[in-house]
Amino acid sequence: MLTYLARRLVTMILTLLALSVVVFVVIQLPPGDFVTSYIASLSAAGESVDQDTITALRDRYKLDSPVLVQYWAWFSEMLRGDFGYSFEMQTPVSEIFSQRIGISLAVELTAVVVMWAVSIPIGIYSAVNQYSLGDYVATVLGFLGLAIPNFLFALVLMYICYNWFGVTITGLFSPEYMNARWSLDRFLDFASHVWAPILVISTAGAAQLVRVLRANLLDELNKPYVLTARAKGLTRRRLIWRYPVRVAMNPLVSTIGWVLPTVISSSFVTAIVLNLPTLSPILLRALLSQDMYLAGALIMFMGLLTLVGTLISDLLLAWIDPRIRLGMVGAN
Image 1: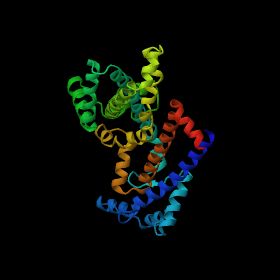
Image 2: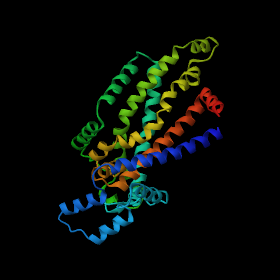
Image 3: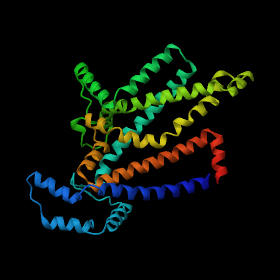
């Protein structure tokens, strides 16, 4: 397993290197560059542009140099922790990350945990009690969760909370706690707001996981080894949790690689509707304004999440399924 982990870490590094090349090329595809876009936005706002500042920026980021020189300047600075400067937000990218990455991960990873914590027991119950009232209720709610877009659910939730209870659920903090230091009162205020985006983001994913787990578990419950285990006297509860559930979980665990970045990318509209101070709306603004350094850093971060999630899913698969673990060791 140590050899397997070492090989996977080397592969992750090479993949990130290839991803950086793709990200740089894609961001460079639109005409002009981010300094040109910056000048155009200032001119449209009626502000003057200092030519010395523009020259200094073009020299610093090698914009008049060949593409390979520009790429190496961007990538080497990023390796040293300097992600560049966001001309759209007039702030270094590292400061934007430090201000928003904690809140973003808290909201989105909590949504993933809630998604799994809700979907696994419901999926198991629905499969074990097929065609029962609870199964029909879970099926109907699952279809509703898949059919209703996140942004529409967020709008309906905002309407209900404001008109029925007089509560505003936009944002993650009340105005008096927006820029305050962390304390018990600020945490309680955060908890009173964060439930709404977690509910909206996790609903569709939980509905999908319930359907997948139910289908997989129903398939496993009808296999001969289950009948053999029952014939040997194994109790129904112990049998279900020890064998079929572990095998049925394989497809769900294998999706962790795309769940982490998908939660971030799929919360674009939700973050805009609920006015969340997370990284999702920042990435959208960066892409629209051709803010190269901010967009590149965010996309690289999503790529890193994908690679880390894939590694976690592979290790979890090896833990819950001995067949996969033996295959990993045998491949080495």
